[in-house]
Image (cartoon, rainbow, N blue to C red; front, side):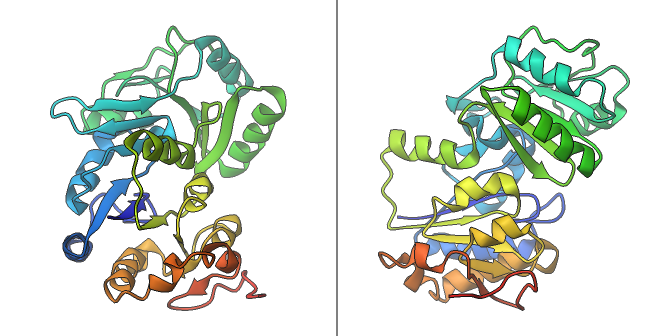
Length: 294
């Protein structure tokens, strides 16, 4: 078994659908023995169409690693999950309450936001996810899987540093430009992947992981072949073996073709993986910020 774990936004696609060329490429890879797994910050309702499009038959890592869910028909089946205790979640909310950022607290396939937050309400209602716009004070009556602050990128970074310095027992990461994600202690996409592999007793002959942002780094470090894209932050590129054109230029399709041509085999040789991190092979052009020092 060969395992391909991929992020969605900025990786698999830069839009709201998987390009047909990518769908076909994933189908061909499945005939070559590859199995697909999604690892995303999205909730299950939003991630499911993408998992189905690429034929991912393994549980999906969603909520940025706070949940591992298996398709169960009308409602997903929980494989593993982690939550933030409500008292600690309230402290997180207090630290960001006076900011200008939108706030989203995630329950079981439902989202709580502030009254009047039409951005959050509109987005989730379009995908038939229940929204509770009743967050009128910095406290919750449930243990959330995660809390997101969304808005100005500089404010997101500053708030993230403040939460990290002021509060123990949570993980702080940037899940995208202006997306500050607060997760249960010890949770990440990589941690969820490790937990899944252990409980499922999976021993793939090869692991490929693809992602484009800071919340993907821990997952990339689990892979024999770690892949990112030219528009990824420098920290992410330093964790990669391979840098491809961005999703907007069909970089994921290039990755599928790279695997089809079996050019990835050298990466699966014992002892080669760590040697190549930090000086990634770049297809379609060398990003100027990366110095290829060996």
